[in-house]
Length: 316
Image (cartoon, rainbow, N blue to C red; front, side, top):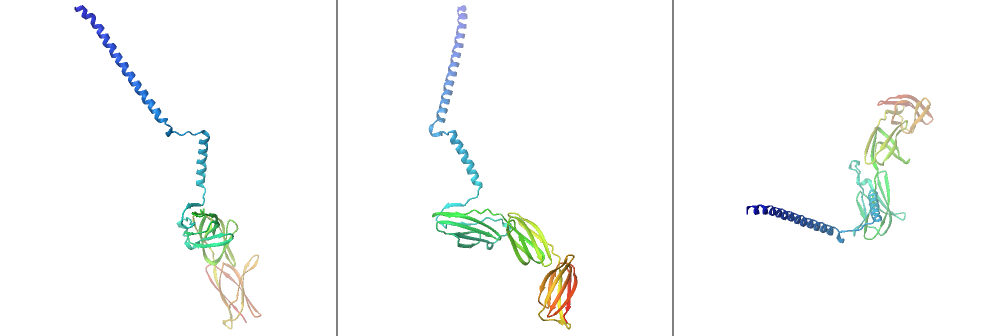
């Protein structure tokens, strides 16, 4: 009996071992089938026609080109057109606050077929226009720019102005005549002012401060959006011209001629027609000539900076 039991025990052990292996294989099979089902499910969900779009290589290339074109268009200024029932033209311009541009310096002109339709003043303006083609002229100080627009019913047009201007303030020690020559040889003139304050197109300028016997020159650069200031030193001396007779002011019609004496000769500074006249002239040597009827009287004198000189001529 004991021997039988000993013989049977190995068979039982092997039977248990086989059952355990079969169970392990069954579990592995179940897990494999489950994983395969999930994979098929994922593939089915991802390949539903409603979630897919087929793009050919040519179409994809076209989309890429469109993106490039749209990106470049954004960099190019253009007139803004919107659907509206309001006024058909909206005008406005963005300017840096540091330029101190007032509304009175901003002027608009709307023209059609060579005729002026509207003259407007101020930064923000709006008007109602019939359908058609128009020219809009913007002027800010000495700066000008023109745009052509098309007006259609139910649309509002807002022209874009790319502004390139700056403000200049130039001063001198005394009132002078100013000449400002721009990049396109445009000349702006201001008479008998001690200072000039103006809005100018961006660029290089030649500035002249002109006196009868002296011209000061200066080259300046006007940068877009910048406020430029410059002071020119103009040294002057004061001369009082007085004509007398019998120790009394002449009080009669006469003529003064003032000449600047230089190595190359003498150059006329000016003519004056009162018996008493005050003038400001640069330092140097001069000659005054007084004419009364048939009488002529002369005198040479020296002018130094910041001095007052009295020139008295006796008319016998």
